[in-house]
Every structure is written in structure tokens, then in C-alpha cells.
Length: 207
Image (cartoon, rainbow, N blue to C red):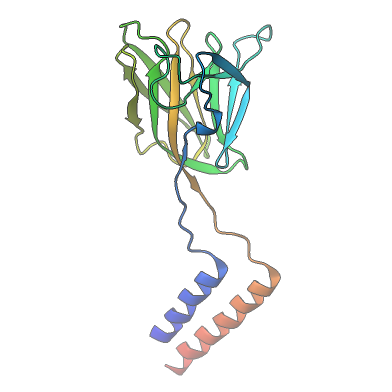
């Protein structure tokens, strides 16, 4: 059956069943602006097949993300980052095509160096409907810290996290990996697959 297994492996490659997903890093560098302003960019931002959405706690507020200019020394940490510019606003991360993904890591930084440590909690909605949670501790000092997610943060439909009521944070370099299902074969490919199975069966009978 060695020859038959070789045929099956070849067919798998033709069908695209074996697929390796590459991770993507949302770095927001396209939003860089060299000034001393905090600029709003709207409630939706898309990059590398992912969508970030800002929501506000009530309908009287207009949700929006914002970025700090490179010359705003007491806010800019050396890399363009996003800010959810709403008190108690929620940030939601999803794939633009609605597919599953894995959350690998994220950079977090204080918006202002208050010296008061605080936490940011992430909630992941899994494809099976369950939820996972992870909390990261910021030290209250201006500067970026990288946080790595648990292995539970895979097969995700969405990840959300809350902006503090007065301790705002920035986020940057979101490392995510799309999880791709095998593509649906086209009719011509199905015929090729069927022919391959016949070959495998014939080889098996001969042996």
C-alpha cells in the first residue's frame, strides 16, 4: 500500500487540504503622524484581514479609536499604537471574513504615566460558544510591555477588552494567526480525487 499512500498524499496537496496559516501582526504604522496631537480615526480599523471595532457604553457617545503623534513625548512610546478614545469603551477584534483565529500576543502601554498599576482583561469568544479570559497587569509607567496569551486563546471568533474608566491604555503589535479550514474542492478537482481513489483501490487489490 506504499504506492497508494503516495497517491493519497499527492491528492491532498492538489486539494489544498494541507494548509499552513501564517501569523499576522497589526502594527498600525499606516496611521503614523509626526505631530503633537491625538487624532481620532473612527470606530473601525482594518489591517491584514482583521477588523477592530470600538464601541461606547451608551448610545449618547460616538465611539472612536485614536492615535498619538510621534512628537507627543509623554504619550508616544516609539511605535504607533491605537487608543480606544471612550470612557469604558470596548474594543472588539475579529477576522474580516468571520473566520477563526488564534491570539498570540499584544503590546500594551499606558496612555499617561500615572505610576498607578492597573489591569486589562481580555475575553475570547470561541467557535463552540464558550468564553476564555486572561488579565494582564500594567505597571503604570510609560512604556510598552508585551503580553503573551494562553493556549486557550485559539479557535476564536472574537476577542474583546474594556477601556478603563480613567486609566486609559494603548495597544500595538497584535500578533494573530488565522485558522483556515480546508477549501471546498471544485467539481474538476472532485473528479481527480475520485480517479485517485480508484487507483489506490486497484493497487490495494493487486497487493
